[in-house]
Length: 103
Image (cartoon, rainbow, N blue to C red; front, side, top):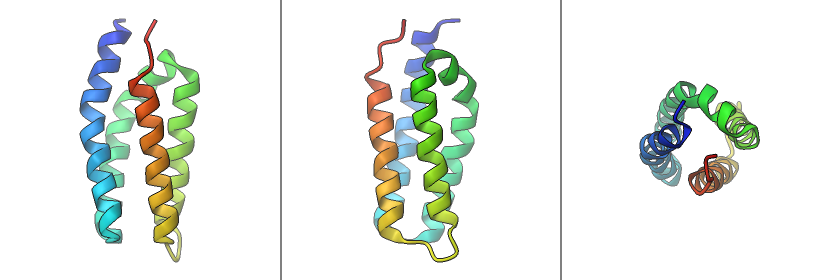
């Protein structure tokens, strides 16, 4: 499998989705945030297995970040500051993975 190509495709496809999620979080509109997060999550699922095969460490960081973000978004009384922190953490994971050198 050409992991370098898969890596590039993931970064190319998911970065705009992350930016959409980030913009939604900045609006503080919970409905927009939920829609953007759901769309990001559905697309993450397409790449999940490949990311796990490329780097178990990055896979774990994505899963942790996405899980905590989902919890914050679906809380009974969502805390916008916490949601924004979780989205920012996901951004850091995305940035680190985009710099990852595929072997």
